[in-house]
Image 1 (cartoon, rainbow, N blue to C red):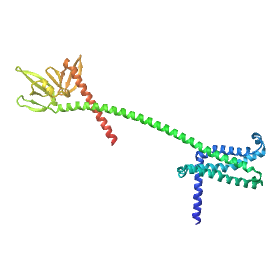
Image 2: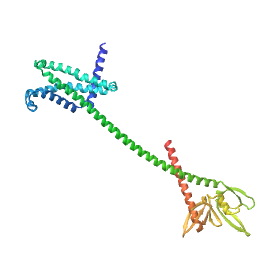
Image 3: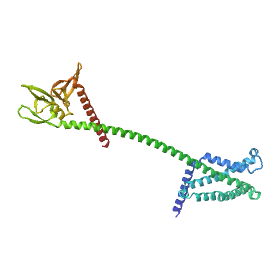
Amino acid sequence: MRQSLFKSVKDGFSSVGQFVVSFFSSWYGRPVALGIMLVSSAFLVTCFTKSFPVLESLLIKQHTMTFLFNIVLMVPVVLVVGMTVYSLDKSAYWSRYKTGRWIFQLLMLCPVLGAVILRTVRWVYLGLFDEDLFEIGYIERDFVLVMMCILLQQVYYLVYGMWREIEDLHKSVLMYEEKEQRLIEEGAAIRGELEAQRAGCGDCAMYLIYAWSILSDMYKEIEVSFDETAFVHIPVRFLSKVYIQKKDGVKLFYAKLLNEREVLLNINSLSGLEALCPSILVKNKTDELINILSIRTVEIKEDRAYLDLFGGEIVEVGKVYWERLRIYLDELERAMDKAKELLKRNWDVQGEEE
């Protein structure tokens, strides 16, 4: 029984201690504000109940002692008002019932607290000075001033609390405006990135079509003869160079393979073969086609272009066809660079996902 009672008392003191600490940690319990309210209340009670002028009253020793004594008496009043307002403002229950809260606060802090102050001050003066303040009519004037000080302290908490709410609201508005601006900037950045990706997708589509046409031409087949008697089918990609050669007055179509072998082609014209595989076969001369995939390097000597082909042959490019061939080679190089870029981007994305 004693242990439970001791524990209850201990918990009660602990709760009160936590409440006091939280009060003085908040703006309600700022020492400067409490000190100003305390001194101003004691000054009003001391000076405005005297018949002497204010400045003259401060020079009287008795009035100065009364002023200091009133400061001591007003300490619990200021603290009670501040802690009451603080507890009501922080109460989840009273926050739902604003009207009831203000009625309760005014009843507790004006008539109830006023009656307690009235009796306490009378008891103190009777005990210390053997003087009944009720008989001399002094207490009525002090009581009115104390009630006014209590009301002014509540007005201070109300006005300052509203000002803090306005400041918090202003900060929230600024924060939301900054957040909105940040979202707008992020949206613009994302929109720009999407536009870049859309443009990149357009480039990808163009290069994809080009790559698909090259791939399709690489797998197309043509009839060739290794011994000029029997013909077999091989992919066009194995051809390095196609040219015309006359034998016994007959125009024949030959090709050099990537392995340097020469074969006879079963075709009717170079233009027909070029039309069959336009993505990889390009005209070098009137009687010659070059497979652009077989070009190892391009060399420029004395304003003339030479192609080093796979198969060990170096071919001079005709002046008329060099510009067209250069465009083909540039497109192929851009397509290969784009393919490398897309592959690298794909590898980076896969690496981030892993």
